[in-house]
Image (tube, rainbow, N blue to C red; front, side):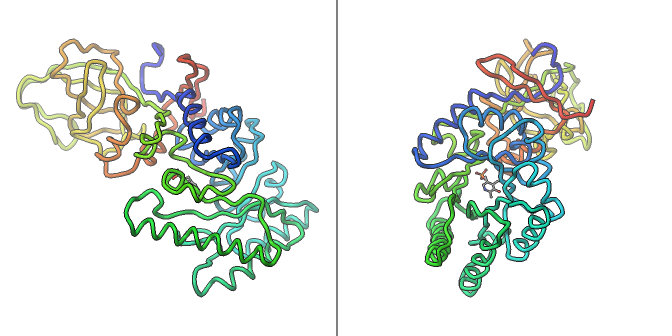
Length: 387
Ligand SMILES: *Cc1c(COP(=O)(O)O)cnc(C)c1O
């Protein structure tokens, strides 16, 4: 990495393969695996992650929008691809051209997609989404909505130009422990199963029923059904990843760019949050909030040096931040700093910033090159900037 002397993110494809195999083994042989690669594969680089998952044997991939799906198709990814979010009906031609599966979240959208597919004389592959308690996307089906929901889905799936492959729902608290969360998750799951069985009674069946996100995958094996879709676990983050023996895929690294020894009573960075209490050795790192290093990690967040831990001093700037080198007289310009990764878990940064690992990895910005590693060697580099 000697010619990459700014900030980069190493993506460990061996860790990804390990996680994939571990998840598959726990899922069991008759359960399909959907790789969630939305948001540029949680910041890891959607194209390379998708190709790796395809090679490993994944059955399906999911993204959040048509643009994300197109990126993968143009990049040569041929796996079945589900768009979890909304696509305007005017884009049905693209969905069909690229062979992309669209989520249908209400009856009105089913009719809109049907009309467009009919005009083209083609069939659009779809999955029905149920809202069992997220109050986000999907046919409402709880309580007073139940009967109408069954009728609306039955009408939707009978439309001639829709090829109905699957049905799914999404959990709100499957990753949180406690009786109330278990009860809520089970209520969502039972509702999902009741809708499916009410439809079955009318002869409406689905080839792929799926609902297990990372939390449900870790905590509720009964929810695996025909396919699981754990995102975060695939990338190896969160408390359940650790319990399942999964490995973090991304390590964000930078180098010490400058070293200076400040006098006593010298303040550091904007807002002067930190002032030296004696002569102090300080490192300047070429990473800031524009790289995705949240400003809320300022003045105290721990980072990893080759010789031990250190802390960010003062405010994180747009392109730089300062660290304490007081304990490390041996430190030199060019020494590597792990922002997060195998030695400095992303979970610690998330906790410090009052957020979740998802947000930290998704925030690693496009000017941070992704360096893909396999068997300890760099196999590809990818920079999101348009050069
Ligand atoms: C993002 C997403 C997932 C994956 O969630 P994780 O918590 O990362 O496992 C699964 N299903 C849907 C519908 C999603 O939007």
